[in-house]
Image (cartoon, rainbow, N blue to C red; front, side):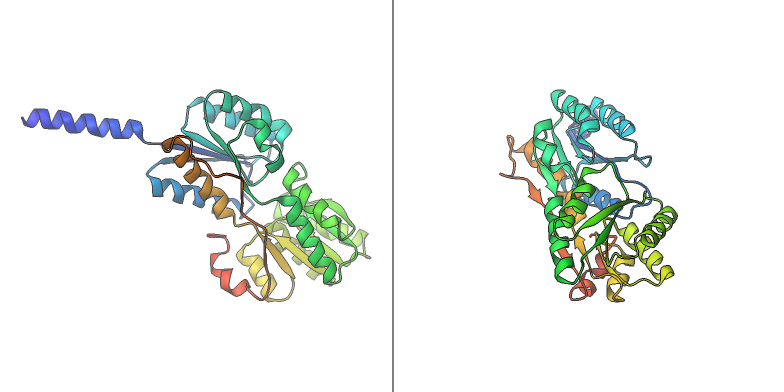
Length: 301
């Protein structure tokens, strides 16, 4: 009898292990960007809530061919679903289409909203980036901005380009490619500001860019309307110090959390899905509400 019970327990245990859901998230985030650990935490928290296994893969080189290879390799392991950021649909599209064709449900997140459905993804979770840029530009113009530089850390990323171009609808601007390296950002920002002494506004489209550009402005003794995207402790300090007018919050924890939950519901609810994409932003953080979210910056937002 004891042997029978032991055998039964072993079968049940193995069956439980085999049936555990497994989800893989692949993003383009670079190691210098404080944005992505919050996304990863969101995915981990969601997987823990539903009892699923979770793997997070990112490509620090920012090489889209490497990211496409990561997507292909992950899809080949037949996970129960994949969550993929989509900064370059042309480079990543074939790998995503292949994953979908192999039977892996895919949800895109963060970037690539406009291309998500055409690649076969179930849906997209993220911020409409052009709209976010328009919102930032309209507010900057209302606050006195007339000519700007847009500091962009990933020139290949269509989402970041959309932010700049949306902003440019209200405030004429020029692009400055900063890369994601903090020291390089400050150096390139300094050079761009010196070459354009007539600008009265800067848009920094990432939190580490915001911090480095602010240091360049301080070193040059320049005062301009500075607005940013995303949250970090440093950005919150800059807002409270009056050095940054506002930042756009896209609630990146939702971008990591919600796709895992949706995939779980899809796999266990006969294809249950929301009726539309899930917009995670945009929202403004400025001096009026910075203190209320500062403790969450870099952790949950």
